[in-house]
Amino acid sequence: MTLNFALIGAAGFVAPRHLKAIKDVGGELVAALDTHDSVGILDSYFPNARFFTQFERFERHLNKLHLPNAVPVDYVSICSPNYLHDTHIRLALGVGAHAICEKPLVINPWNLDPLTDMEQKTGKRVYTILQLRLTPLALALKERVAQADGRLDVVMTYVTRRGAWYHVSWKGDEEKSGGLAVNIGIHLFDLLLWLFGPVEHSEVHLRQPDKMAGVLEMEKARARWYLSVDVNDLPPESVAAGVFATRTISLDGESIELSEQFTGLHTLSYERILAGQGFGVADARPSIELVYQIRHADVTSGEAASCHPLLNR
Image (tube, one colour):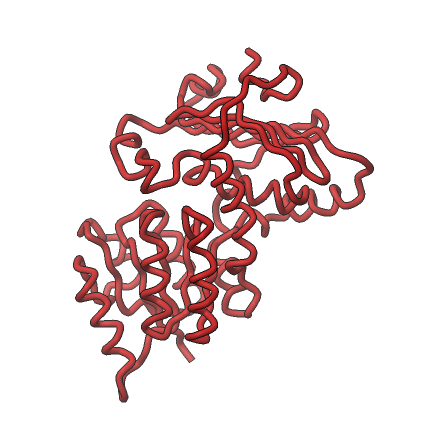
């Protein structure tokens, strides 16, 4: 039986990955929503999908599909701006569909429990995309950490160039995106927690609109982290070569490149969701709680040994 999908945020950056995943798992996109109409990408995957620019008309259409003799939507994929995720998840469950939501499920942790309550009331599930946990590299690291004695010294660095547009868009508005820790860091913080266990102590050493840094003391590691969208934080040789992002994790001095792990995993995520093995609210909670703490923590200078190397330049 073909599963029917709807998608919110069809004009967004991550939407093509979801469209491809829906196609790859044999699903059918029957409706899509975005306030912007630059959605020609739909022709490459589902040219017959109904498209809406008004939330109210989209919601009414999904409700009509659940009337007798209609074909209902099974899943709603959510690729909208972060601050709208909570509303769009509620829409999905309210029309009798499961929700598949991009990271973060919500910006603030107190919005998680109501989603769990709504799951129980509707019998539908809320899933999120935590694709870094599925990479062969992450699975190998998980096994390595389990066998390690003592606490590992970890350095996590994520620097990616963003132009002036970034700070003007919703991504640069902390109320709408959650800031850097949420918008570009949430999947990496999730990976750290999944690999090394609960946080015992956290410090924030730098917090600016375009860069953040700190240290996490966890069960299995001390992790110094650095997030930046400032091109000046990239190695000059990378910029000269036209490479404008670096994503690395170092374990006891051994540096591992993560950039290749960031693509191609949405289909696998969808396959796991359809098999009943998707990540849900409970999986997302630790990283959402952590980034909330990071966003509101006092900034301290920190000792040189506990600071990320980019802060010690």
